[in-house]
Amino acid sequence: MHSLLDALSYELMRNAVLAGVLAAVLCGVVGPFVVVKRLAFLSDGISHAAFGGMGACFYFGLDPLLGAVAVALGCALALGLLDTEAIRSYDAIIGVLWAVGLAIGIVFVYKTPGYAPNLMTYLFGNILLVSRHELAVLAVLAGSVLFILALFFKGIVAVSFDEVFARVQGAPVRLLMVLLLTMIALSVVILIQVVGIILVVALLTIPPVICLMFLKDLHSVILGSVLLGVGMTLGGLTLSYLYDLPSGPAIILLGAAVLLAVYLLRKLRGGAPRLLPDLRG
Amino acid sequence: MTPLSQPLLEARHVTFGYGREPVVEDVELAIHPRDFLAVIGPNGGGKTTLVKILLGLLTPWSGEVVYRFPGGRKGRLGYVPQFSTFDKSFPLRVSDVVLMGKLGSRGLLRRYTKSDHAELEAVLDRLDLTRLARAHVSEISGGQLQRVLIARAVLSDPDILFLDEPTASIDAESRQVLTELLKDLNRSIPIVVITHDVTSIAPLVQHIACINRRLWYHAGGELDQAMLEEVYGCPVEMVTHGVAHRVLHDHPHHGHAHDHPNH
Image (cartoon, rainbow over all chains, first blue to last red):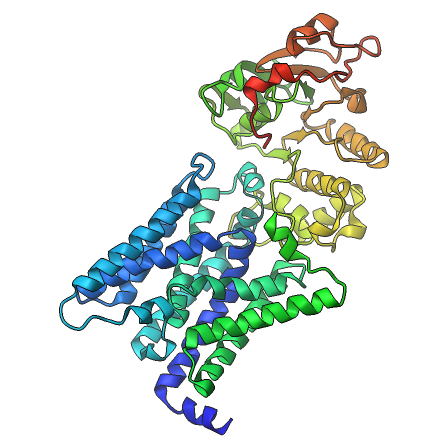
C-alpha cells in the first residue's frame, strides 16, 4: 500500500487517477442507456471512427483530442438524424463509419513525417499519458454530458424506453436521440484516453450489465454503475501499477472478472440473473 | 354545423404502404367527438397501419390526415399498442412507465410534478395496478402489462384514444374493468379500437370500419353479411342477429399480398 501512496505523489499518477474517475462516472451515467437501448455497436463504431479525426489532427499538428471530439460529434449527429425505420441496414452504416474512420486515421498516421506516434497508444489507451491540459478538456466534456442528461433526463429516458410512445406524446424524438448520441459520443472520446479505442465498449457496458442483474429502477442502475465503474478503474490502475500490466486491459479484465463472479454467484444461489437472458432476445 | 358534428380527425384519400404495394388505399374516415369506432378486418388488412397513420407515426404516400381540436389547440392522442413497443428488461418500475403518460403535458425540461403523481395514483387504482406499482416491468404478466399500457395512455389525458387489440391478452375480470373504463372515457372522448373480436366490446361500439386495404365505413354498430363478405372476400358467419362477430375461419390466401410487420 505504501508504494501506491508514493505513486500518487507523481503528477502523472494523480492525473491518471482523476481521468479514470471522470471516465468511470461517465460510464456509469451513459452506460445504462447504451446497454438498454442496445447501442453498444454504435458506441464502438463512433469510437473507431474517432480515430480518423485523431489521425488527421496529428498529421496537421493539432491536438488529436480535438479531432476525436469533432468526428465523434459528427457521427452522433449523422446517426441520430437518420431515420432508423426507413434505413434497414442501420448497423451496416455504423460498420462503414467504423472502418472508414479507422482507415483514414491509419493513413494520416502513416503519412505523418518524422516520428510516428505509437498506434498502440490510441488503440489500447495509456492513461498515464494524460496531461494536465487534456485533463481539463476531459473535465469540460464530462461536465457537458452530465449537464445534457440532467436537463433532458425525462425525455431521454422516455425515448430510450419507448420511442413510439414518446412520438405519439409529441416529444421531439429526433432531437432527444441526437442528444443521447451526443452524450455517448463525448463519453466515448473521454474513455478513449483511458482504455483506448478498442476497449471503450467494455467500460461502457460492464458496470451497467452487472447492475441490471439486481436493480429495478434506472436511478439505482446509474448510481450503481458509477460506483462500480470507479471501483473497476481504480482497481485496474492499482493492478496495473503493482504487476506492471497495461492499464486499459487491466481495468477491463478486472471488470470482466467481477461480472463473471456476480453472474455465477447468482446462478449458484438459484436466482436466475434477470437481464442477461433477456438481452439475447 | 354544430360543434359536436365537426370531426376531430379526418383522413382524406389516404394511401400508404411499406414496399411498392399499398397496404391501405384511398381511405376516407372521420372521427367525431364521442364516437366509439371498432376497426375490424383480416390479418394483414392494414388495421394497425391505419391507426399508425392516424396517430401521425406513419406519413401517407398521398392524401392527408387533418386534426381539428377545439380552439385550434394541438390535441393529445392516446395510444395503446398491441405489442409493447419497448424492451421489458429496461430498468423501470410499473409506476415509472405509467408516469410517462405525462411526458407531453408539460415542457420537456420540466420534471414530473406532484399533481402528475397524484393523477398517477388515481389511474393505477382505477386499473387495479396499485399493488404492482413498484414491480419491475419484466416481472408482470401479459395481461397486467396490457393494463399498464392502458393506464399510461389514460394518464396522458388524450383527446382521442386508440387501442390496438386491447382484449387480446386480458383475462375475463380485467376485461370487465376495461369495458367499464372505456365506457366511462367515451363520455368525454372518442375511442378507436382495433379488434378481432367485436363481441367483447359490442355494447360500446357505435360505428364499425372494416379495412382490407380499402376501408368500408359503417355508421351504426351493425354490420350486414354482404358488407363483411365484400371486405373479407369470403363467406362470413354472423352469429347473432345484427351484431358483428369475429370471422370464424382464417383465409390466409387473402392477406398474403400485403404481409407486413404488425408494429
